[in-house]
Length: 184
Image 1 (tube, rainbow, N blue to C red):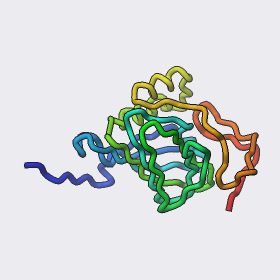
Image 2 (cartoon, one colour):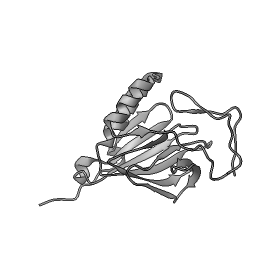
Image 3 (cartoon, helix red, strand yellow):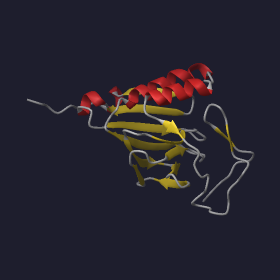
Image 4 (cartoon, rainbow, N blue to C red):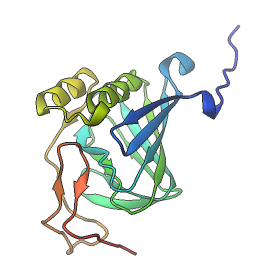
């Protein structure tokens, strides 16, 4: 006889990814019999997130709870706000980052679960204590968990002609802007 499984928010395992991102493991493979994984992702202002990438075996969805997060849909970046949703099928390119000056919270859902907590734990370990992992270390972790980075258009869907070539990425995934931008 199977039974329902309850987990209180306070009891969820929490991974600190660098200094700007916390992810809570809400539903794991063991909870859902591998059907899906659900993560509660909190990103402080400027949190890097993930550069454009794809998964060959997993579909992924993003549901924004608070704040404004930049989501890449394979064709470019767009700003998503509370209640906005992005579904990414297998092999589709996606990415995310918090360029705003406030906290972002979103749910990330993986189907099937594919042990994504292993990826987040690995990322947390690589970035612990201010460590700056090498490109090789990052790629090895990604490939172990079915994640493949790609070159994707840097188009801004919110401001199609307002691309700022001065945006650069630090090795820790945070973004360095020459001056603060405020999009309203």
